[in-house]
Image 1 (cartoon, one colour):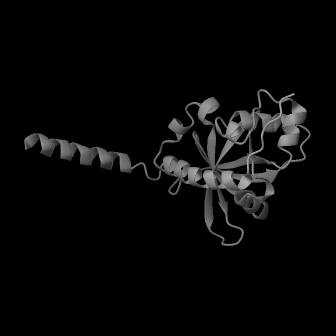
Image 2 (tube, rainbow, N blue to C red; image 1 turned 60 degrees about the vertical axis):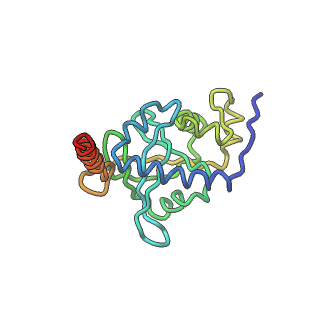
Image 3 (cartoon, rainbow, N blue to C red; image 1 turned 180 degrees about the vertical axis):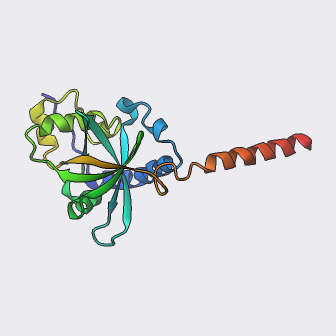
Length: 194
């Protein structure tokens, strides 16, 4: 039977905090399709916009997710201590950024779902390299080992309510690319003249 090694939460939380900032920048630059190009290796990401339970400010968190029978599922891998999870428990109304668009949604903890292990396996498979970093190998683990290893994970179902458009969404910084191209063209043209 396969026994995974547990990774220290504190170290991983710190690592993922920096990684999440980088992922958000890529989304804002309009690179979501590139980020999700090879989900089995790099992971399949969406961004959840939620409201801070203490501050009331909008917060953005990239998470791995799986679509099962048209429904969205994700996990809070650091359990109920995850800030984004605590925020959605306080206010379940969220906005999600997917590669195919932006949606208002309702997030709900379904950690007691009868198909919990099956759903978590799909989310973990869709997390690409992040799963092995956390000591998870969903293709090698049987259901009982996966259930034991993910017992603290919170399983979240997000229902899409209404499609969103407008500012403050994915690609809001995509204007940077034409600006960079123009600067490089001007620089190249001037360099060529001198």
